[in-house]
Structures are given as C-alpha cells and as structure tokens.
Image (cartoon, rainbow, N blue to C red; front, side, top):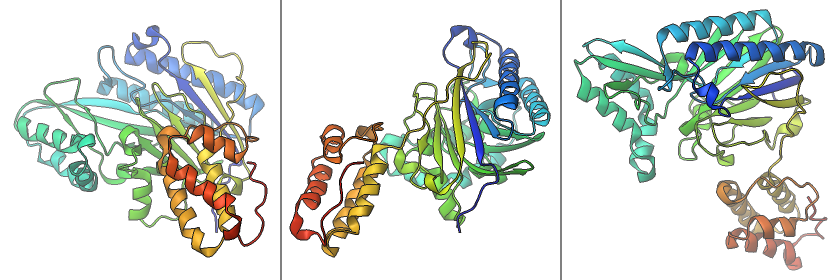
Length: 395
C-alpha cells in the first residue's frame, strides 16, 4: 500500500544565492545571518497564509562559503548549525535543507588511514567511474591525494547536506566527489560515513511527517543514480515524497528521478521548476513552490512557481494506454520505446502545454530521434495491429 504522508500541505521555498556580487563578498558568518533573516521573514508570512503547511527551505550546493573559498571554517559551521537549529525550534512547521555546506578542518601529520577507510563505501561508484572515461576517475583521484599526503599536515574537506527540524539535525554526505579539494594543495576529501551515507531522510516530529530524498550534484548523474541505487541496495519500497537535487552546475535527469510526488532541482545555474512525477496523482497535496532572491528584502509571498509534468512522462502515460489497445506483439516495442524516451532527457525539453497534439509534440520536441518518432507513429497509425480503435491522441 502506498504510504500516506501526514502533511497534505507543503510549501517549498528556494533561495537564489547567486544573483548579486554583494552576496558573494559577504563573509560566511554574514551569509548565515542574512539567510536566517530571510527565513524568519518568510516564516512570518507563512504563519498567516499557510499555517498548517510543512515549510521546507532549500538552497544550492556550496551555498554558504567564505570569501575566496567555497568552504567554511569550523567556527562558521558551528554558528550555522546553532542558528538553523534555533530557527527550527521557533517554527514547528519548519524544515531547513541547508544546501550543502562544504567544511574544512586541519589535521596535523597523522595517520590518514581512518579517512581512507571511508572510501570503502564508495566502491560501487568507483567501479562505475573506472568504466566511463567521461567520469574522470574522481574517486581514485581523491584517494591518491590521501596516499600522497600521508604523514603531512592536511586540510580535510567534507561536503554535506544538513537538514534541520525541531532543533535536530540530519545529514547526507556527498558520495561522488568532484574537485572537492580545489581550495588547497594539501587538501583531502573526507567522504560520508555511517548513517550520513543515506540519501533518504525520514522526518517524523509532530506536526512533521515526511520522507525526503537528497542527491548532491554528481550523485544525480544517470551513471550513478545514488538515490535509486540506495533504495535497491536496502530493499526500500516507499519512495521519498520529494526528491531534492542540490547542485553546482548540473542538469536535471528524469531517468534519475526518484520521488512519489515531485523532484526539486536547486542549482547555481539551472533554473528548473519543480517536476511532478508519474505517481503524483496518488497524493492529495496542496503544493506550493516559491523562489526568492536572497539579497532582496521579502515583504510578501511571490506567486508560486507552477510545477511541470514533463512531455516525457505524458508520452509514457500515452504509451501505457496504447499497450492496452495494440496487439501483444507490439507491447514489447512500446516498452522499449518508453525506455528510450526517459533516457533521452537531454534533447526532449519539458513540454509545458497540456493541449498540444501528441503528433505535433513529438515532431517538435523529438525530431532529432528518428527511432522514437518512427516507432510510436508506426504503432499509432497502423490500424491492422490494434485490438480496437485508438482513443484520441491529444494530451
């Protein structure tokens, strides 16, 4: 049976941190103070307009950083944790997904074997990198840093998504690093360990009751699919209600989507609306998504951003319908076509119109893919292979 979430009203608030040079020039401490003020501003508005909703605040990977660095010191980290926990105690409806925050700490000339052992949990992803030149062997690259710097004074970097609610904190640490030590020549990357390996976070603290999934940047790549892979490895059946992708210049990949309601991508360059998944209709949710520029004062709630139901998913829905109407011999062809469509994310676009004819949408959006176009049109137009007349193809 599909899991029912207690919160049937959800407001997601995304902060855009990259619009102003003035933000980038703030110290980490002052960035934390600014974000705290903005969260308070919006919470006071939500208390009046959406008092019964779950409020989820989120921002991108590396959203808080020191000047001339993309990480923060231990002092700034402690300040960040303290301020976010206090906010989450003040507002019981509040969940804060603190982007990711990269942290650094000094390790003086000791044995780095313990940190190296954390890489054992990344073996699957290391094997994937070994087979794909495009992925640049980043895990091996970071392991080599540890070998080269054994016995030296080093700076250890970690990159974690920190989630705050009711004064508590849960974390997911990045499992697929990419140039994480770029700040320092003597830097090493410290992967997640223990419970911080999990990209699934269950938040159950009255009035909150929600399962969320988090992927950090490269974890979302079609080659890794960290969230999907974790569910397979742990035999987890119930998908997160919301799947958050927190990144620094990466594209959303529908083949990696793993949510029962929506995927929310928060990036330093991409500006995607929330993407409804094919199971979203199973939930009775009043969902709102707001986006604010961090350097602009917030005096009222903006008009919510409308989620999209991508053309790919609408085509898959139509294919599901067709499989009930065509001869058995063509069901396998349609299923193969569905797999091609969801994997061909890069050229399909999000197709916003709900009134466009199927033939026109395919011609306009999928003209580059002769296989997809020809197979679907052949099945649609060949009346001899159908069990009964096809219904309208409008979507």
